[in-house]
Image (cartoon, rainbow, N blue to C red; front, side, top):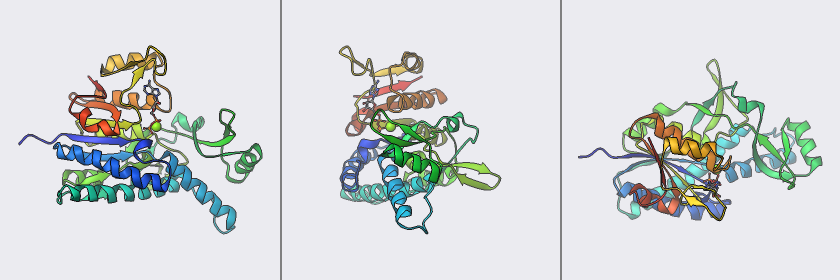
Length: 314
Ligand code: ADP
Ligand code: MG
């Protein structure tokens, strides 16, 4: 029998929605797309983002400490951990149901709470750039700076928001456990929200006030699991050059060199499409035979069959 293709899927914001009811509805559609790939004979590992969810949890925990003087502020690393468990629960629940609906009873589904080590010397810590949480007035922002030591930035005339560092993932702490589960045929959800960022202090792993980009975390996971495919599922069917312009060109198939040229020409927006193309390039260039694909959630199966999406390969 031919060896199953191993695929790491990175789910973007549109696979999960923005609110609790939205997420509950969205995961049903997401589960269908994932089980489609399993029915195609692929071995699937799921990673996901957490932008809206970690913002929501962060705000809820901040409200708690405002209401109750005995509750100190919740570290961002703990908020990421909470988001992993919450999103993992919804995905686990929906995936199990979808597998059962298709009479697949032999694939257990499990979520791995995942810590990812980042480098304390990562330059990202010197220039926090990723906005999280809700907008504040100047006065509220000043208070947050004084009370919690947050770094606040004015965001495009819409008010002030907390910004955090987005360092590169260096090491997936639970990779051994993830690999055991995947190798034994389980459907694993891991590296949620880019992973819980930690720095090493001897034997202690200290939670870091940062959010790791899920596109880079998924790339590292795919490399560590020796996957054949990294599929980044997002809100567009393909990446494009001259995106948003009348002469936009949607990209089907790119070599690493072509992708790097387009990156250099500034075709992909930082914070959205750029990290995806960078992660795709990093994965595709890491070993012969590795392919990355960027496409829509609903098109995952067509993408793997070579019918759509942007493919990046050596
Ligand atoms: P996700 O939650 O999946 O990470 P993002 O919003 O971060 O989604 O990134 C996907 C978005 O990137 C698309 O919806 C699109 O608006 C935007 N984008 C920016 N530049 C490009 C480009 N060159 N080609 C395609 N999409 C682009
Ligand atoms: Mg994104």
